[in-house]
Structure formats: C-alpha cells, structure tokens
Amino acid sequence: MNNKLKVLRAERNWTQAQLADALEVSRQTINAIEKGKFDPSLPLAFKAARLFKLRIEEIFQDQN
Image (cartoon, rainbow, N blue to C red; front, side):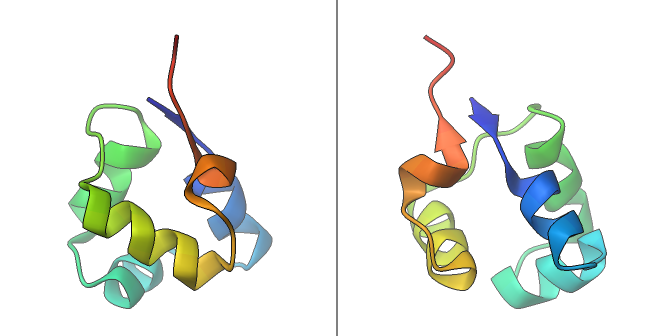
C-alpha cells in the first residue's frame, strides 16, 4: 500500500516519534508504514485521517 504519511509528517515538521505518540503506536510502526513494509490497521488508518484532517484515501492508496 502506498501512503503519504512521510510527506504529511514532514510538512508539519514532526518526527516519527511525535507522530507515533499522536497515533499511540511505536516509532518503529511509523517507520515500517512509511517504508511500505507494514499496512496500518483500519482503526489506525482512521486515526491518522482524523489527525491530518484528511480522508483515508488521501493518505493511503492501494498499489493496484
């Protein structure tokens, strides 16, 4: 799954740790999602969308 998490985080000058704290996950989870090694759960995707005030589809896109 492709995502814009790294770009959105950088636009706000947030570290991975700061984003992880806001989403209540580990920094390693954020790193893995940003690198495409891990797809977020649906609840985590919704939480990220609320945090960035975007729709899930604006952050996460299917690779197909």
